[in-house]
Image (cartoon, rainbow, N blue to C red; front, side):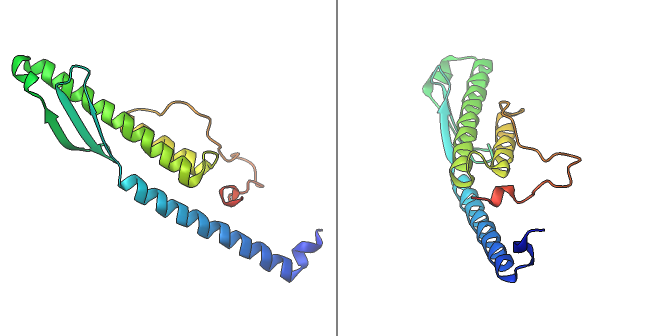
Length: 150
């Protein structure tokens, strides 16, 4: 048996280090949430008829249509709006994923899961396949604190 396990001082040091990592992770998560909440992205369609602005949830918060729509069929205008909306959501997903990587770390299992869910929600389908670290299902020794390690 490892002597550190029975040493109260070593145990206190490990506990203090774990607490510090947990607090740092919580602060990073709050910062990530705030930064993502501030995201606003605008994108247009290739024909220049529509510009859609979305927030971090992908909700349409503004729509600008150009005079060109007066000479265009309603179906083409609708396609332009949907194209602009999809482009804005794609940019919002990319920006959100960058914020997650910047605040939680690109190698963080929690960060990868959050980025994947954001991408899936904003893109309307599964995010591009990138392997996610998953706990072994039958492994009793899986360390759930892996994201708190430096």
